[in-house]
Image (tube, rainbow, N blue to C red):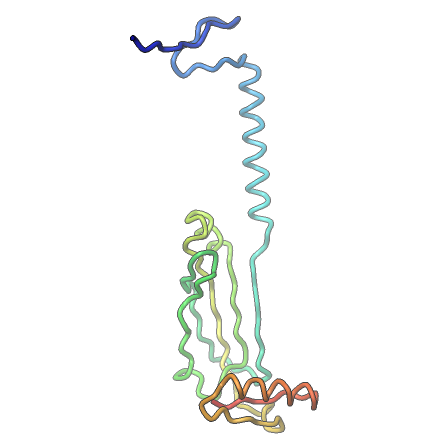
Length: 167
C-alpha cells in the first residue's frame, strides 16, 4: 500500500508554490499592517507601565552617605530577591532610607530574558543616629525573634507608638 501525499489545490490566484500564501496580496498587506499595529501597541503598553519604585523610611535623620547597588540580581520576576546589601560597615548609626527601583534598563533586561533575570536598583541612605527611637519603647528578642515581633506589634497597637525590637 502506498502513502499518498496531499498537495494544496490551485486557487483562483494560481498554483501554490513553496512559501506562497493563499491570501490575495491586499490581505497580506492588511495582516502586516495589523501586526505592526499590535507590536506598536504592545511596545507602548510595555513602556508606559512606569518604573516601579518603593521607599522605606526608618525615621532616622538621613546623611549624605549612600550605598548603591544599581544591578542587584533578582530572579523569576523578582520572586527570588537579590542578595542582602551589607550596610553595617558603611552605616554605623543605622539606615535612614531604603529605595528599590526597576529602572527602564532594568525592565528591558527583564523583558529580554522573559522575566527570568530581573535586576533592580537598590539605594540605601545612612542615618545620623537613632534620635527618633530615643522615646520609643524597646523589646529585646532574647533569641526568639518571632515572639518579640508579636509582643512589639501588640504593644504598638495598644499604645499607638512605634516599638523598637532589639535582636
